[in-house]
Length: 458
Ligand SMILES: [Zn+2]
Ligand SMILES: [Zn+2]
Ligand SMILES: [Zn+2]
Image (cartoon, rainbow, N blue to C red; front, side, top):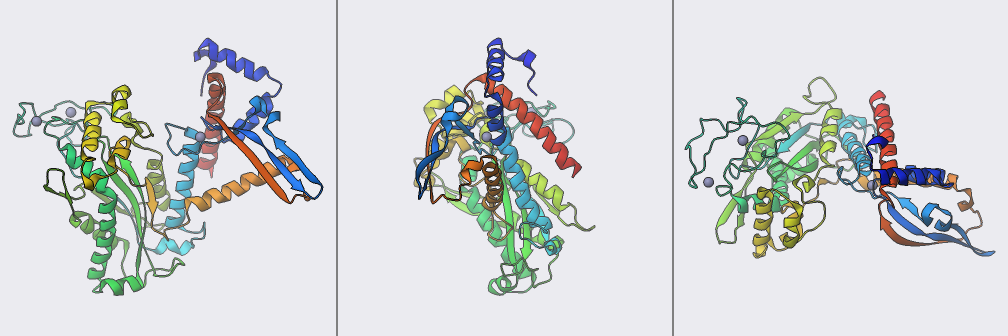
């Protein structure tokens, strides 16, 4: 929570000015109704009702504080807007949980009995990086051979890196690191995933002694996945993969495969799937997933390794992260802007490599994605019948809010009305002063604490 004592004097003055205004309550209400968004869209405008008895203005922002209406920004990234990202993660959780546990959002409870596996697919190595994962407490202990790389640098790192050590994910030797292959992986990762899902189907068909067509008639592979950036700047995928029957009504697969067999098929598919891509120097590069692969069966009963609640929460958490913790931000950038961002040497090299690859036809368009280190896929995606959609969940909430808004402004519920015309004009993004922002953010923190307490108690 923002403590007034730690704020600059000017911000404190702005807070006092805001709180002393006669329309403060209405302003605070707008902040609440925008979901305590940290950088709401400011709109100016009016709503006109046209009825048989003539035209009249039924609402105008002229009567609002600062003559604007605040609308939530809707950004999914926690670093941009904690409140909107919290809401997004909540929606994601609903979607994921509905598909894992059923009994909601049009998915029957019997879905719990379908084979379901939580799987994390990583990228392979492109060169040694500083890590906490090699065990023995040390990053790259003495056992590494040879002791010097071709560039004369040591291949060892005996440090024990703490979780916030900026060296984590940085190459031991940047000149040994395969930057083009790294970027190629990010760029082609969506296609590699697609091939992986096809491979899962093929392997399951083979295991059950069916042809691909026969398999498709009795079983469907549904999934939802979220892409996450590892520290070294490469994407990996967290996913829930489920087997269903062929129809659209969430029937069980008409074939006997349990979650353990599904997990086996996922591991085999992830280990075997390959994608050969052309590199600018004319060579072929074979892309594959990394050997670090995690699968856990999910079940509401005693046999699952993970509960549906845990699996849904785990994936939803990643949905609000993005490449912005590499210092690249969320917007498209140019190479000229890169030095101003103060990124690490590693990120700098990644971005430049992506830019250079953009000269080659296979990487056409990659320059628009350098802020995502070459990843152009969706951060969250699902097969058609996994569960409901984010759009449907948002629609439900929007309908609820509109109803609340309508109750609030009874004049808008004019029975006479035949036509409503709205004129809106965008006037800016964010709050007008840092004092307003501080007020909104502290209210947001309080609201989140209350919601979290309610969720935990539920
Ligand atoms: Zn927002
Ligand atoms: Zn190290
Ligand atoms: Zn080297």
